[in-house]
Image (cartoon, rainbow over all chains, first blue to last red; front, side, top):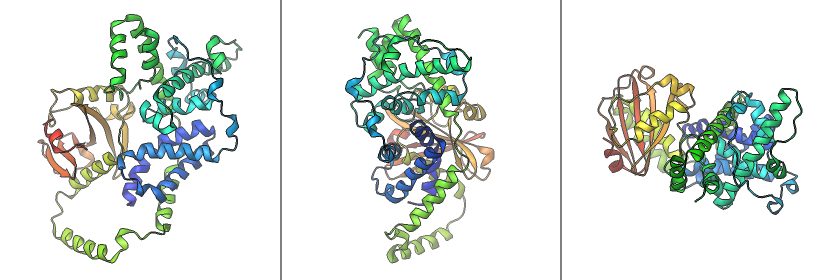
Length: 183
Length: 242
């Protein structure tokens, strides 16, 4: 792979990859390392990828697998059978809640979402991959991805409400019983 | 499909419109258009998702990360055990002939070819590209319109597109905007640069077509911008847009 192509690949994808890594690791330093590690693997193996158009999915998938491989606390992942039901009729979220918030606070709220939901949810908000591509990446059926997005959004709304209340210096109880049950 | 089912599907619809061509959403989108309550919910959900997406896109990336990745990539490539193609005698001989031939070719329009090379390589690397934000969506809608022909003046506000989140990549130190659009079920990738940034480009206002294997490229200028459209599905689909 020529260095020009490699540079283009880095320029096209390193920013969303870092943000995805940040949502996983919750730490900018670890996120930077994980992003670098992903491109390091590409430099060693990526040239073997037959379909160049799959490079983006390959990078996101590799980053996620490297994260899972490096994590020592796999047992803390919430087993799916313990999860509550998907919200049957989710309320419309409050846009003003987000637009008035600092980006760091929104990311901190996203990082409070359970990892099993946070992975597809972050990929959804990065908007680089479709739900089908996300399903392929995390090796889950499409319906499961949709369910995780729904549950993840419920948790995110609850986390944002907590962040906003915290920023205003107030303590408020959970507004959504469903979100509480899922968290 | 009831509204709860429609909501379940619609909450997976990306706010940048990239899922517009996905048939999975068609029935739920139609229902949202016909049901005011569902339509309001969907509009709010999209606004919320766009706001969260914008916040995520605003998270700063470490300033030295790109340089570190590139340096690491160079070291890794240099250190790999397999012999690079350019290091093999037969290829070296062929490359030598190619260099001699290239040296004999007039320089013009070298820069134009390089820009289309760049667009070609970028389009090959990414299956689905960006074009995010309100301004991008508007330009995307024009490009998606079957009545729009390549070569006609497009409503391009480069600064606004850049500032409102359109995917921006760098070529020779200059910004190039990229957004994808869909026509007749086929995706195309448009690359837009400011003509002033590439003064040596000698393009016509009529799109010039070239083939690169199964990929076709159309290049032209509207005097203010240089535009390259790449089709990974061949010349026929691109010619249909002229």
